[in-house]
Image 1 (tube, rainbow, N blue to C red):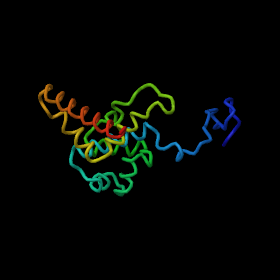
Image 2: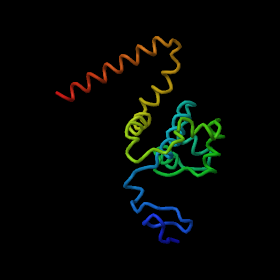
Image 3: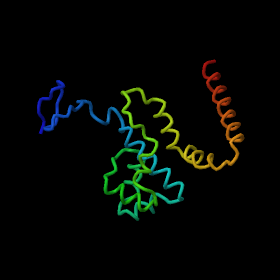
Image 4: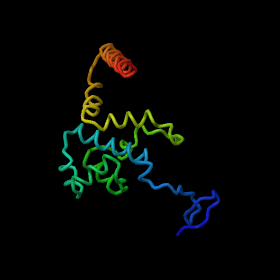
Length: 158
């Protein structure tokens, strides 16, 4: 049931303001993207295929794909089942999520980072990098990546 809200936009019967913009125009909710990314990272970390995860929680692998891409939201019951199948507490899927809601458009760097982490290279890098025991070596690798990114930026500006 839709009612006129105090915000001048449509509101639910509970008085919550709703944006008239279609969700597909804005893209996935940042929380859903974060949860999907954490599902994928944990699954990859354990070496479990989408098919195997899907089978263990009574879904198709396509549904797991949609959850990981945040094309579909994960229900509380499915997140509970995933936490059991992936041997992780439910809170794991929310770790690293900012408690502060950021204004629209302020999460562009986070979006590009999440996009990178959704790639096979990003997941492998995120899983492998912490395994480098020496902090000095990790720092040198980071310096190398920054230098290479700087060279790429300079080449684009030319």
